[in-house]
Image 1 (cartoon, rainbow, N blue to C red):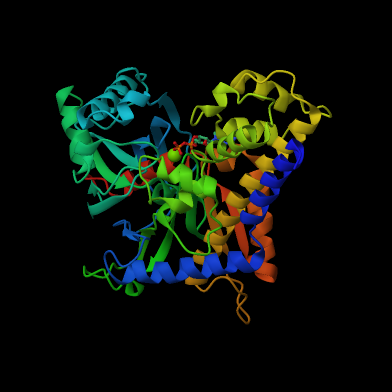
Image 2: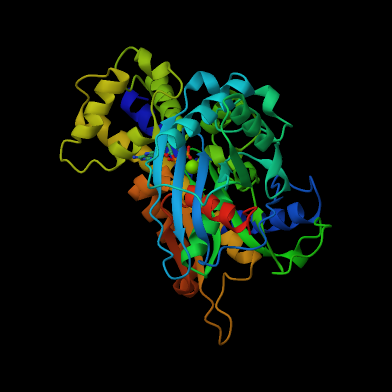
Amino acid sequence: LGKWAKAMAIIKELEDKCGTPSAKLRQVADAMDVEMHAGLASEGGSKLKMLISYVDNLPTGGEKGLFYALDLGGTNFRVLRVQLGGSENPVVKPEFKEVSIPPHLMVGSSEALFDFIAAALAKFVATEGEDICLPPGRQRELGFTFSFPVRQLSIASGTLIKWTKGFSIKDTVGQDVVGELKKAMERIGLDMCVAALVNDTVGTLAGGRYNNPDVIAAVILGTGTNAAYVERAHAIPKWHGLLPKSGEMVINMEWGNFRSSHLPLTEYDQSLDADSLNPGEQIFEKLISGMYLGEIVRRVLCRMAEEAGFFGDTVPSKLKIPFILRTPDLSAMHHDTSSDLKVVGSKLKDILEIPNSSLKVRKVIVKLCDIVASRGARLSAAGILGILKKLGRDTIKEGEKQKSVVALDGGLFQHYTKFRNCMESTLQELLGDAYENLSIIHSNDGSGIGAAILAASHSQYL
Ligand code: ADP
Ligand code: MG
């Protein structure tokens, strides 16, 4: 086999292995539905943890007052402040500050991470204008969005089950993360009350519901991926507490940890997983989310360079560095519409130090981006179909016009247009006529705003 033919054979094999025809996606959705039932039936009953959020009353739009939120995602964290106007004036204009998390803090000590977060929060509060004021004697209240799997103990406390997305701090696991934050706030003398601890999916759901009563689920496509939805309380066998008055409970699925024999896994996914900080875990997330898409492509390119001399006689040394190719770079190359694919050319040059790539090579790279991104997008659509199935909302019922709105957020969804379009068209393909009853909305900064709204509805002053 000639070198070019060998390279093409690697691409062809990848394309076959990543294939997601509708029949396969339906199997994935069915498996998701089955695992959702299992995870709700008993603790540890499934790879899907189906965590009880303690949010049994979603926002009505009538919430009022000045509230804060802290949103710790994966790459950045944000501090924000919102003035909620109540039902006459439900529009919120949040003010926020975004801070990137220094990588050494992701794998250091719990104290160091929370000290860093508390310091940023203190600075945010210290620099606010005099027009920002609370009623006299009132403590500042905060919603804490913490986008990692937490076993909630109440609406405002919960222990960390495990880290994901490149975080690995042993001494936080098993600890109450609100306790960790409070200790850090005390160490620097910041007086604030944590009124709600929420996952980003739960925050996004709450933020979406504040504006739209038909929101029934939220999905995050960012550094990681996850989903939350509104479940009927009596459909949660593992819940032994009092049945909430609303009859509902928001469930944080932790769908990133979903795994099924129907998932199209390749050798590249297997090696990526084996080399990760959490081997064997978060398999769905490793196929879909922003932290990993670029790295999958890098691994394929590496093999093409080694076995088929795709970039010439030597393997470019930069190509051997894990995570050097990031998903925003992938997205930029994938969206390149210039006739000579100059964006692809400059990414190859700037990131991988591969100068003068041919148009032929650049075209193959665009194709590669398409294979990997489409698989992720189509699998996320299958996940959403799984939720709709669980709720009996995947078909049109006789005489019913039941609207289902899913709120989406996260950098991948927001910025990777081809990913987002592919996910939406796949939902249409899978749902057929029932697609008319579904709306996908972008809930911008929903996770942080939602946490502030939940802080308002769980305020100590109510
Ligand atoms: P987090 O998930 O950490 O809370 P975000 O929701 O802001 O943060 O998502 C950030 C992630 O989104 C990045 O890690 C990256 O993978 C992805 N992302 C950001 N910008 C782009 C882009 N232009 N194209 C594709 N993916 C992007
Ligand atoms: Mg986030």
